[in-house]
Amino acid sequence: MKLRHLIINNFRGIKELDWVVPGDMVCLIGSGDSTKTTILDAIEYVLSPRWNLPISDLDFYQSNTQQPIEITATITELPKKLIQEDKYGLFINFWNFKDGDHDEEKESDEYSLIICLSVEASLEPQWFVISRQNGDKKNITASDRELLGVAQIGAYIDRDLSWGRNSALTRLTGRENIEEIPAILADATRTARVALQKADLKQLAQSAKDLETAAKSLGVSPKSGFRPGMDPLGININMGAITLLDGDIPLRSGGLGSRRLLVMAIHKNCSKEGSIILVDEIENGLEPFRLRNLIRTLRPSNNESCQCYLTTHSAISIVEHKSQELYVVRSENGKTIVLQVANSLQNIVRGIPEAFLARCIIVCEGKTEWGICRAMDDYWQSQKFPPLACMGVEPISSPKSGGSEAPTYAVELAKLGYRVAYFGDSDVPLIPTKEEMEALGIKVILWAGNVEIERRLCLDFPLEAINKIIELAIQISGNEDSIWDQIKNEIHLDNEDFSRDINLLIKLKGEEEIRLAIGLAADHGSWFKRQDKGEELGKLVVQYIDAISKKDSGLKLQELFKWCYA
Image (cartoon, rainbow, N blue to C red; front, side, top):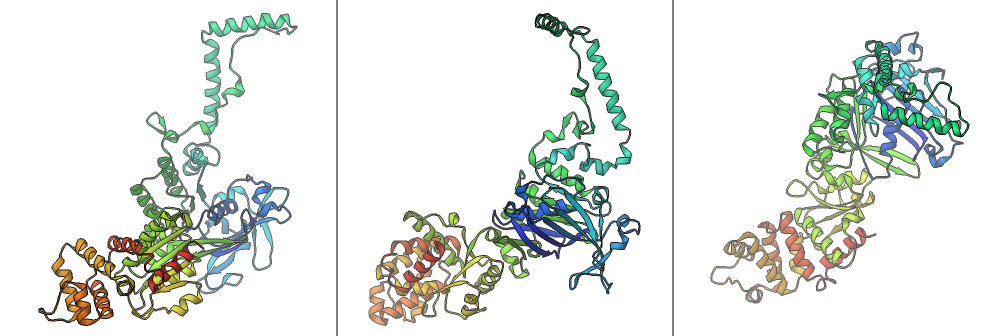
């Protein structure tokens, strides 16, 4: 069974959602108020085998009970029993991703059922199927909905580790295989009561006699005498008392992570005709290695008629998914949308998964810019501004060298609803262009003069800081001769004319040429093209932040500051 189309109206924080689900492995990501969990609950409710639901006025959008809750799910790859004519065969519709639901069969269509849940002010849920052809409705029973095999791994997982009513273990075992158990439990109750009657309860019996004497003094007369005994209602052993054990230890007394894994294993094996597993915050209670293995295990294979819906706030969880399995949930003024992550962001998924958990993203062209962002974050904190993390701002750099993909990353992230800034060099044309990025609301911050960051800083820094740049490069590389050789190659001086004194070089070639040459040497020699090296360069920028405040580099960093703290 697979959910292909979900419509939600007036349910909790969702006034409206209309979502076509293209995949079978669905990982929902988004901020804490984006309604991810509400989507999972809606799927469970509309396909739930329960005859009643814990609905209150608070489950209506803005608690307005005048507008009914309506959840509609289009289901394909249906259990055979449901499509029989005496069931819902006359309500079969057709589905494909191009045309959605329709009533006339076309090539490559799938049989589908449209199942609806409606809850009005009376709080009484009603489930029914709808015919797209004529709009006719027919109630769908709880036992038929049970065939759909939906299961949410949430707060009440312990009930699924015993053979209680509607538990996953009961479904796995089959109700027909446990019909004799209630009679056995009834006999056990009677046996316990008889055993207690035969027990030597002298102290309890004496207390009962003392109470009888006291009761008589107050006018309460016993009919046959007080004695200790068992209340039949107090030892009502039901199916829920039969639980899954590991040796003599009930498994529901184990750790949260292990219990969640067990319940997922039960649900995954419950239905022969497929199921839908819903897991809210899949990382809860799990170590990274168990989390990674769980995601791989839950991912449906090509021949499985099932789906898995997850929510997560874990970068470890994100990195285990393909980009097309990730869906960003956005909610504004009650309208919720679900956006699939583009395949072009696969490198970000693998290399910088935490970016998808931010609200605002600074896409840095290279690792040098990323390192400078880190250093500026520390500096701004020293000036009593909140950390960027507290502002929901995450700087990222391209996992690949060169940074040519960075503008594409910025565009795709902006399309997913993230607030995005692009921070990079101006020495090569951008694809997409600066104008194309700005048209999507991206803040584009580029150094003036068609230069990369190294040349820009060398042009803007005071001369003493230029020496500091060279000293830092030597310190990082551990090879002074190599650094000066790279500078000499950019200046184009003979050995006898070259000096390691910046002031002498300026007298020979001019200040601007020497500044540009050192900047080029830093760029071509990759002095700072690593995140930690970029951060060290950023610390040097902070030292001279006042000196460059009127220069282009200082002005651009001020732009970045304003964007981060807007």
